[in-house]
Length: 367
Ligand SMILES: Nc1ncnc2c1ncn2[C@@H]1O[C@H](COP(=O)(O)OP(=O)(O)OP(=O)(O)O)[C@@H](O)[C@H]1O
Ligand SMILES: [Mg+2]
Image (cartoon, rainbow, N blue to C red; front, side):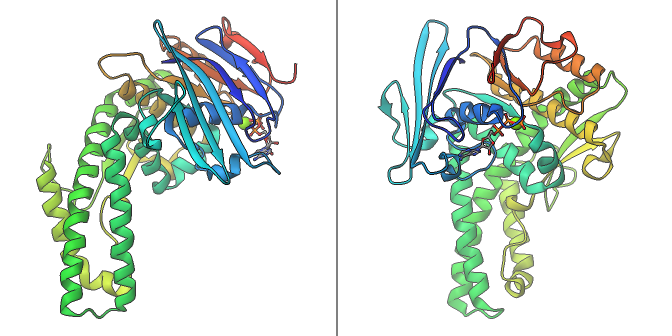
């Protein structure tokens, strides 16, 4: 699905903004603070039903306002769809497709797919495992709503289990142990499903990420990704859900005494790690800023591969301020790579000096 029009009335710094995209190659330009990142955030709101920056919905309401309202026209061949996301302090969040309210916010996932790159994410994602899990979860949720439900259910069970561990203060009655056993069983099953899906998706991205990183760096460097979890199922190339579940249950059992002392759950899919490597070394400790940025871009390219699937149109690629910190060669390689993709909307704070964006429809916010 492509996007041909977006209306923010209002959203963050915009009281009213209406943009039309006439082509598949759009460049939104404007000085710092004009709202370029906000526009891309608004577009991706319609895709994932929440802020891609991890902001609370209320933070996107204009200062002194009571609500925000994002509307877009999207199309897929001859079919046009109106998407709308409204959030009000009083009303809460509502999503509409062609005027019909969707029963749940999660129902919006998969209708209009986007891949969002932001330089803010480079530091966050590359330095913090929780942010990398979030990246992966947003991606997989766009391909599978049941995955999102598993995640939500996992969080609920985990919170209850932690509550129990905390209240026990190291000592549990027999009946409490039985209750904990029940939480463990549920958590192991949900955690195994989450882990298996993440392993599958990351496995499918490894080759694409390495290939794209190679091309972006002019084949000077090699990059990789892996999904690490404990226990690691060493030697099993293709774990099953039952294997992962049994391992998780066993791990929780082994750690129960220690977790009772600590008061929280130290093992499970909420502690797993998506690891980026550069030349075989962990990127979060060794890579330069530009290399980290290149890695995240290569990851985003691999996201497109996942979301494009076997059939149907690919996602819309939203690139926020993507050229900053990239050398000329990497910027040119990036534009060549995205040349083959469906729709691309990118932002720049000033006119690019090189002819990277020849053929892009330009929209200047302060013009
Ligand atoms: N809820 C809000 N209400 C009003 N203004 C907001 C709100 N949230 C953010 N802003 C403002 O929106 C403005 C534009 O922010 P945005 O990050 O989109 O700018 P930008 O064009 O991407 O700038 P840069 O080139 O520096 O990245 C900022 O001045 C910010 O303070
Ligand atoms: Mg910005």
